[in-house]
Length: 482
Ligand code: F0G
Image (cartoon, rainbow, N blue to C red; front, side):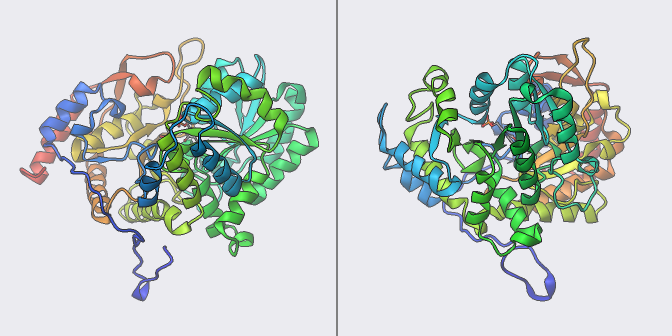
């Protein structure tokens, strides 16, 4: 599981760090949690952290910072232009990602905005392994369309396929021929495919995609927000590369892409983002959008302190004892829940443990958002804030009809080095209780539905009085426990 083996194989994930700064958490009583959920419109995004015990909404901007990152933040070179902090970041991008030219942006979706505005025109089609919510929104905003090219097994939630994020190569060639090269601005590969459960692609697959991109002379763009974890799983799962270092694998991956972009909120444990390339012509095409949307070219909307933290974080990505912490906790969480019969997405991926909500809540129709309802129910019975990744995170078609998501997942994110194993065991306990009482969970309906990215701020209400009944059952079983 980690590099340390336990006697007689009783492996548990062992932390190779110690905790020196702590934040007190509140676990408010279930009566308050039910109230808070009502106030939040049954949408976990709208909860205040004062009501949240374990925040498993996302790893974005919530990974623990290292002592070295905090120390680096103190020597930030605050300058509007020509900051040495930015020069240090450029060097880290070259050293770790192997790219010479860097455009800084304030976060991942800002990179998507710049890339899409530069390259995507109305009628364009962007083939990808799978979409991410903000990527899809930006491509559509520019008049483009997304085509997802996964193999069938990628959507089999219970599987032992090590690389469910692989792109389907036959479908890629077929799409290029059908749509025409002139209508494809780029092919996008997303490391650790977020929305299908943090599932990696193999290096062999990325090499094949590169070969096809070369054959048709199409640009290959890599979303590297979860690159470190994908590289770690390549090292663990792809026989050919098991002796290679993280540094070598990361460079091989980025070396195959013309353009690499990332959310530093995920990649390097802080804030910010970036777009990098070795092709000066590509850099030039995007360059003028940075001062327009982000800030001067040597800070791009990121505070210089955060630039320093990004820099150190990028070097830390090379250390597998750091990168493996979250995937190893996730593996533990998934395997323990599976043993107790909870339908989990397997193999365990990165970013978080994912529950198959369609199976957990078989009785809830998909247009009543089973994963959203499960997120609300889990919060009520535990104070754990997870995230819906299903139809609520999807969109409606032009006639207002729901486009049902391929999968309904509840994501319990495990940010790096944030939780303890006893907290993970608490999550297991409450999820198991909820599974045994799943018949009590009911559906949700929108009462306030924003047009773009509705899942962030949308408001919902339960289709019946189920949340109250869930609370009563909790009291019956747990007495006056929090
Ligand atoms: N690409 C991927 C693969 C992501 O996971 C994210 C963000 C982005 C792009 C956008 O980056 O948030 O910095 O603008 N994922 C977060 C999540 C929000 O919770 O999974 P951003």
